[in-house]
Amino acid sequence: MGDPLISREDAAEALGMVARAAGKYLDVLPHLPVRDLSQAHLVKELDGPLPEDGDGTMTAVADLLRIGTRAATHSSGPRFFHFVVGGSTPAAQAGDWVTSLLDQAAGLWLTSPLATQAETTVLRWLKEMFGLPAGYGGVLTPSATFANLTGLACARHWWAARHGVDVTADGLVGLPRMPVFSSGYVHASSRKALQLLGLGRDYVRTLTRDDAGRLDLEALDRELAVSGPAVLIANAGEVNAGDFDPVDEMADLAREHGAWLHVDGAFGLFAALSPQTAHLVRGVERADSLAADGHKWLNVPYESGFAFVKDPLSLGRAFGGWNAPYLPEPDDEFVNYNNLGPESSRRARALPIWTTLRAYGRSGHRAMVERHRDLAVRLGGIVERSADLELLAPVNLFVVCFRYRPPGVPEDRLDELNRRLGEELLDDGRVYVGTTVYRGRVALRPAIVNWRTTAEDIDLLASVVREIGARLADRIEPGQ
Ligand SMILES: *Cc1c(COP(=O)(O)O)cnc(C)c1O
Image (cartoon, rainbow, N blue to C red; front, side, top):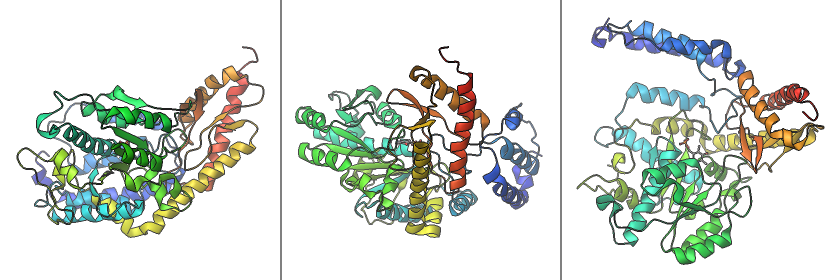
């Protein structure tokens, strides 16, 4: 078989095979268990020695389809509620296939004016959706982790410049430590970004006023008064209960004390789409930098994220290459996006975003946001009406934080019970929900962010939790 040049006419045939398999897979996806343990052994079939001659295009692709459609986690279906994992809208998924078909090198205008124009356009559309000023700069990233890295790299450049240092050219040597403040909601990915930037993962000062981690604004005010130039991380949507830091108040403090405000809005930024939830993100339009994800609430396939900055030139300052600081003007058509973010070569990840926004528009994505919130409220209602379930935080977005708490099980056994419940739910696979620790209690925290999810899926989630919970509670002997 060997040389792909010999099999060049296979290309269209192989894609045809994928398309036929896609039809079948998508037909059954809503009915599949999220994870089918009976098929788990198939992943081992991926392993084996490096082929010397190869089996040829059709055999390899057929094998991947056979294994993949059975052994994959069916997380793009309607009942994956663990973490915050979005699905793929039909248009986004097709747009993603086109991205692979065209295989653009999307780092430079010269290598793909198509990808560059699409990126410029979707960044403008996203700013409009989030209510960000048109003059903000932006860049697409693989994820919110990279978007946090992008925003915080700009913050670091700004902060070092306040100390008279060009950190892009000269690094951090000789500088004091950069003060970073946040609430207890700060996401691990912001810490990872700080760690990569040489600022220290553990140097974030979290100023909290309760055991949920809510921000102590007065303490922040006091700290900023003495810290010198500092960076604030506002968390617009935290993963345990879907709560938000007070972004607008943080923007007030940032202005008053001359601090940089970075907003991690991985999923929460999408709250801006609906009048029901827009109040949660009031003030994001005043941030110096922002990060969000496409592969969560936008329902675009992995990998997809975006970063925005108030000063569009700050991206080029933080990421421009050696001796070639290409700083595009905000209306420059010939943008080289690889100078504006952490990547160099990159795929045309604007295309699936373009396709889904073109297909469904602002109102379609607003409808999805509102439906997910309605479904979360529905689940919250079921929890509150059920004697064996306990809601642990108000529902304000798409996360429902609750635990199984049947009458008769003592408080000191509830963590163990809920931890086992989480494990059994994941093994069961009908609905996929794991546990977290919220205010010192083991809790379930399903997140509803898939366009396919319906009220029946939510009702099934509640009934499976209660069914498995009851079985486990029976095994807990009083006083054991
Ligand atoms: C998921 C998430 C991130 C990280 O996003 P990735 O896409 O996984 O890199 C950052 N912040 C918050 C609040 C998140 O929910």
